[in-house]
Every structure is written in structure tokens, then in C-alpha cells.
Length: 332
Image (cartoon, rainbow, N blue to C red):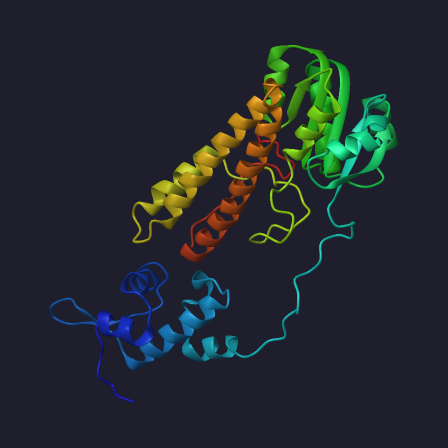
């Protein structure tokens, strides 16, 4: 084993790691401390070659470079030792495959959801009604037997106090998505609910229209797990605000890798189209079927790219914090 120092090009050739990646590992994560020639060229040792190979392999195994870059080669070798792994990922909570849990509030609407006619028209997984209440007061007093994935509410009049009741109940129960059908409402109240991520539709609505509303919050691909988002689940609510995405895009302009900027910009565009298709779904009854699919497709893609952003942020050591509550409500 020679002690002759290597320049970064030689190091890249020996390890199969791009020069740009080696520079990121060194400058941002301090993985190496090369010596320098009088001409300011970096010179790497044989130990650096060995460490770079270990970092490459451990990164492939899922270790974040930000957490292992400062470790010595001996510590990296210990991490490389075979470990017991699960033969399959942890299973999601037990529920029949292709089933979505739904709590219903409003006289008469639970019977419609449970009818065979509605089930045949439902564009997605089958429904399982977990709880049924006559009104909001009964739901709040009695409590839910289990947290539903979707909360469906029918009210005759939708005013600000009712809006607050619905949102408080959804937050309390950990509901992912809320669908509200109303008879009369002020436009400002309806807009406030839409901005909070609630699907709102003025009644009366047919079974077909109601099934479109519910289908619009289901993941498009329920046949397999997508990037850490489990099958037979709902589209996760949006996690990152436009401000956070702009910050991440700005940070990446000073980096050698432009992936954070590209991914952040894609999420912002998908979120905008997701909101647009939701508004069309809420307003345009004639095209509701089409916009239900567009909302589901854009929401699924947005959720997948949010997962991708988290992977990029972890790899690049970029601080990232969700701006929205898990139930979809904006913090603050």
C-alpha cells in the first residue's frame, strides 16, 4: 500500500465517487482534511481513499453522510458489520386491504354512505364507517371509537362558529382529511375552510359527487408502497409552506448540488396545482369527476416529492421543519 498522496481526480477514479460529491463531503461535512501543495492543490492520503470507500458503501445502506462523515475509519468499519434486519417493513395498523375508515356527522348521510348504490359509485377503496352522529354536539359529547381517516360532515348552515367546531374536532381526533357538505354559508367562511385544506361542497350533492370528493384524497396507487408512503392510505396533508420551499431553493444556490432547489420548486408547483384542482372540484359539478382524479394525482405526487425533499435535506444536512399540523391545519 503506497503512501503517495493523491489529487482529488485520482481519489474519484479509485473510489468511483464523483469529484463534486467528494468536495461536498469535505467542505460541508468535513469528512477529509487533505494537505495542500504550494499551488493550493489538495492531496489525499491512502487513509482518505479507504474512508471514502467506507462512506460510499454506508451511504448506499441508508446512513446519512452528515452523521457519519466525522467518524474515523475504524468506527465506519464497525457500522459496516452485518446487522439483523427485518425481512419486511413494519405493517400498518390492521385494517382490511383497500379499506378507508370514515366517521360521519349529519342526519341521513351515514345511510347514504353505507348504501350499496354509493359503494358501487365510490371511486377507490371500500368504506368502513367507524362512527355515525346526528350532529356536531353529539359527536363532541360521545367521542369517537377510533380515529377515522376521513371526517364527513353535513350541516344545514355553515358559519364561523361551526367552522371552528369542525376544525377543532378534526384536530382532536387526528383526522387526515375533512369533507363538509353545507346548505348555506358565507363565502368568507367557505374560503377559510378551503385554505385550511378542507373539501367543502354546497349541497345537495349526489352519491356520485360525494364519492368523487372522497376519492380525491386517496393515494393514486394503492397496489404497492410508494417511497415510504404506505398503500391503502390517504394522501398526506401538505407539510411545507411556500416560504420554507423558497428558503430551501435559495440555500441550494450556494451548493454544488442543485437537487434541493429542483425538488423544492417541484413541490411548490404540485401544491399549487393540487389547490387549483381542489377549487375546481369544489366549484365545478360538471367536471368534478375529472378534477377528483387530478387532485388525487397531484396530491400523491406532492407527497412523494416531500418525502424526496426530506431524503435530500438529510443527505445535504439542510435543516427542515414541517410548517403544517399533521391534520393539515396551518400552525399559527
